[in-house]
Amino acid sequence: MRVRLLSFIAALGFWLIASTAWAQTLTPVAAGAYTSLTANVTGGSGTPTGNFNTGNSSTGVNQRGYLIYNIPAGGTITSATLSLNAVTIGNGPNTIAVYAVTTSPTQITAGTAPAAATYTDLGDGTQFGTAVATTNGETLTITLSADALTALNAARGGSIVFGLNNETAVGNDDNVFGSSFNSVPRTLTIAQAPVAVPTLSEWALILLGLMLAGAAALYLQRRQQLA
Image 1 (cartoon, rainbow, N blue to C red):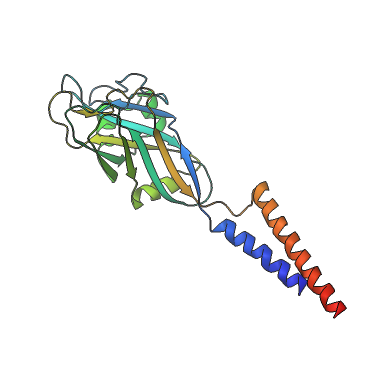
Image 2: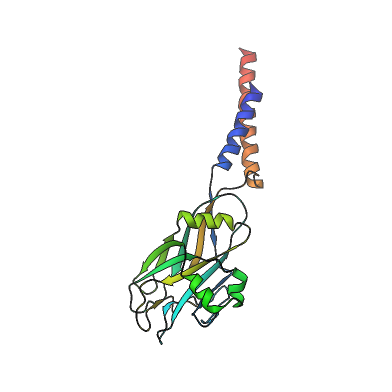
């Protein structure tokens, strides 16, 4: 009876670990923007704190932003949310859309791929989510789609690029994130199921459960002996 009880407690501990998703908040390894003619046109573009202005500049040139994140290896990613400080909004409201990107993170950061093709890639293809920016300094919260989760899971252990396009930009200075150099937040929050190997703290909880179960079993055995 005691062995069965201990086995049940251990199995329960492993089941609890396997069924719990862990939230992780990630910051970008690079951020920036492209025009159809020029790579990394904004201040600090290609660095973690780069300006990722999305929309039309003061001269009416359209820019598309990007954010690159390293995705941890591990269990399945079950949900993901981008949180982005809108900082300044020119002639809003503006709809910001997040897109899948096929150009490699290394090429985007270094600006070695053709600017025109990369610019197109940042705002064309599978859309991962949208948000409407209306107020300077507000935080845009974009819940990413099932397609985004598929892309994130494929990127585990590597990097992923999110393209940003202003879907409603018209005229000069019609943009979002125009002063986003060093802005926060610019985070990606993911819920990731842990792998089946417990951490030290999880092992400690399992062992504690086993000790309590063992003590209970011993107590019951002694009561039976005294009865």
